[in-house]
Picture 1 (spheres, rainbow over the protein chains, first blue to last red):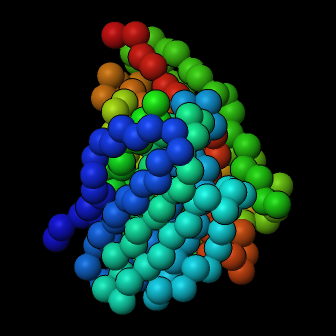
Picture 2: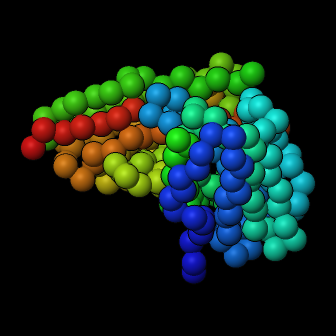
Length: 117
Length: 111
């Protein structure tokens, strides 16, 4: 089966611009989570969507937003880009994040590497 | 909020030596997951531990979940160059749907 698809793979933007990243989860997966990964900060949780609803949100400013569509595909948007937003943005899908005991881990996409100049 | 601390941050070993990374949570977890990220790659799910005191093995990898369900460890016996990468633990607090990742342990190996 197809994995998690993130587009685009690479992106270069200028400060002040906005960007939209896309994530298509594994077919049948309803939970999509977004993480920001930087060398010094590890994996920082952005938000999680389940059945089109945002269930959890991390400690990121309001410039970071997301949404999920009825087919479970998700997008995240960053407005008014800052240099510090340069990072690898990872999307992870799962059947259900809180499902205990069934061995359901996250399947990550390859990420979108965003560079803000 | 929930925090997951992972140590050490870096570990360099000679090929054939053992390696251990430790994960500690500030709150009791319903389960803990481990992931491996190869250089230039993305995290890949390795295993999930659910029960108090649980021990699971995958070939040379041994995963443990503490009795209090607040800590976990990953031990690799006789490392090989294919083990190079960053190992992350990720904890799920009871009743939550947010997986919180540790900072990761980056393993490098001298062949």
